[in-house]
Length: 152
Image (cartoon, rainbow, N blue to C red; front, side):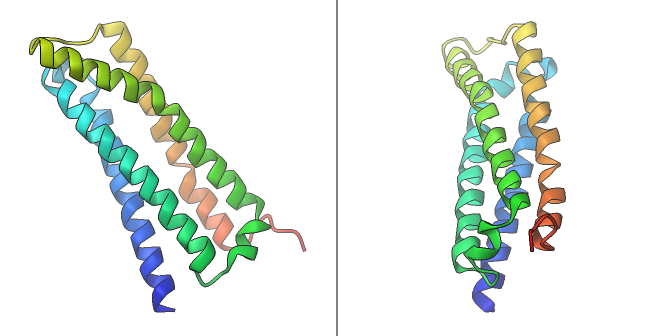
């Protein structure tokens, strides 16, 4: 029981940190924060990526070592939807990550560098899509935890 509580707490903490770093990215991907934000975005995005890995890791630990057992998750279509959505968000974040790294490199070479306005808007749009999709995960989690969608 204690192990399950520790795994849940670790998972929730990682989720909160992931949301925090994504919120910071969202705030920094604006014209008024450039060029200062270019290098910071690289760091915060790396932390966002690390938290995504830790969310996935702690989630898998909960599946295999948690109180409900792997069978509960294996046959839960809402769990599969939740994991698929989380992976989709991760894949969606690749392009902003590549842009942040390019901006950071350019800012190192030229401290006055600011990305083109059009590119900045496109990256911000993708980050905002990530934010909105991420907001669906707790809804799926609530349904999943209650066995909604399970057959039988």
